Length: 375
Image: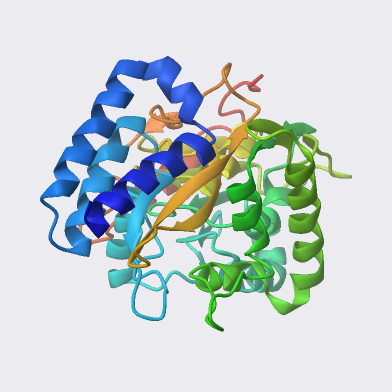
């Protein structure tokens, strides 16, 4: 058995034990289909010559799960991922980034409409978004209309979008939580976020992921939350699900008079945390979603890194399952806009007048754009 065969065999076993969606996907797509794809991957590994061949085989196999929160990636010599993203939506974000920074920006479109563009909800952009909303808070509240452009935003951290929530708020809402699959490997992968397991004095490949968690101002809180979950996983029976926390209820002290109409722009590059934000946003009486359906990548999340035996590649695997399931799935479906715009592209060109369309739509409509949603 060559090293690529060993990596593929180990990857299949890792996914079977540690992927939070594995049992659901076997039930949904059929055990026969899942097992057939695994056999095909094992056969293909026999003729693999390079690490790239191995990663290609693994990613082709994992397509059977139709989940963009699971994939394989190459590790460089120090054991770092050469790619942080494992999904197609991440490629969209990179194309977007080639044209413009992922930093959030704001601007007034007219006396009636203010726009906030958020290309990423990455935790590294939270401070910038907080500063922008604080600085321009009076301007935003002065305008009757607000546009939040999320095109190409493939996700990040839920805490990053918190500065936007007061503008959307009209009524209390509940954010459904998630359960984590309790396995020894999952517990190790979670704990490695804050206390990386080392081998011969070298940090494990998760150190690049750790940087997103351990921002100094929030390090203590992040460590405590992760260790609480790790302890619950280690105490639970192998292969069972334990709660990452209770459902959270969002209730603010007041509803802002302005902005009274909020248009949120989405497209196929919006996924993961961005979809979580949209689940909350669409419950607001102020909000209309414009653009295209989102990626559909939210049901299984909290991706962790699992190095393979060769040390040349690793799996990124979703370890948690949303408690929305099975009643309200997002994966493979996405979140549909209220007003579909065919050419709401990720790449903004000189001929892209999508923002103009949304601005005109909001400014010409009456204050009562639609009745309250019960979603």
